Length: 187
Image (cartoon, rainbow, N blue to C red):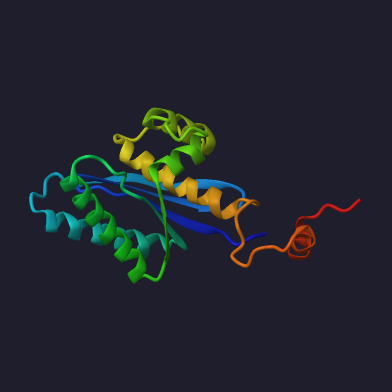
């Protein structure tokens, strides 16, 4: 049996930050936690950034994730919003790096494609697929939490896929089979 992994997924934001933890053995995944950090009561942006860093640090300490996945900000027209979102993402990443956890970033389109098969799916479609895939009954108050869960599940799919790229690469089918003998069915 493969050792389990715990994936911390983050949907960064300076007003609401979604977070989710997913436990996986490489084949199956189950939700440990899915919630939202509300930051609207803090007027100072730097205080919000500190709260994000602290929350991510607390989640890491409590759940000891083995890997960290975060949604990349999408490029909109409002430059100020992009800068704020980038800062939120940066402090969350810094907390993971401080704990020496590997960080992977996914575009919103990649996450949607991975979960629904459609890179242009809306938040409700993503939620419905998460609900079916992970057997979740109760919808959270904010889609930021489900977005974070989608990022974590997308990461699970990427790291557990038999099609994932091997950093060493393969030099043809013979090389692939030699490096994956346990996955070859023999008659």
